[in-house]
Amino acid sequence: MVVGSERIPKNYVFDVFLWGGYAHVNPEKKEIYDNLKRTIAFPLLHNDFINVLKKLQTSASTIKNINRITKMRIMALYYWAGNLDFLSR
Image 1 (cartoon, rainbow, N blue to C red):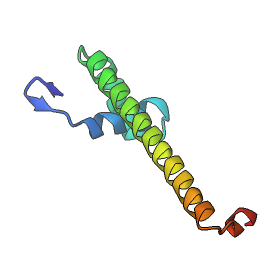
Image 2: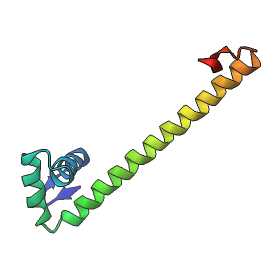
Image 3: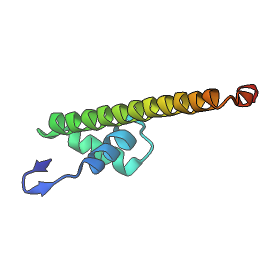
Image 4: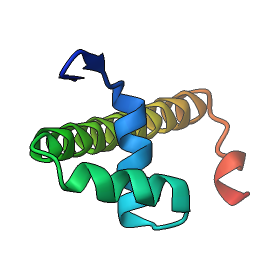
């Protein structure tokens, strides 16, 4: 995102919103968040934050599905190899 002539990286927006706006863990980021909240760019920055959260959720879901499929394939290999001992562990 570009505000005025300054480019604001998505990871910076994410950090400020998460640690300053929602978790209130970082006083420096809280101050930046509060100042951003009073600007006209705030809705756009908030939208960027939500989009990053959506991408993180999609990535986590994809990894979960890949792990599930991999586990099923490994179990099938053990089954077809006649080695079911792993089920008792």
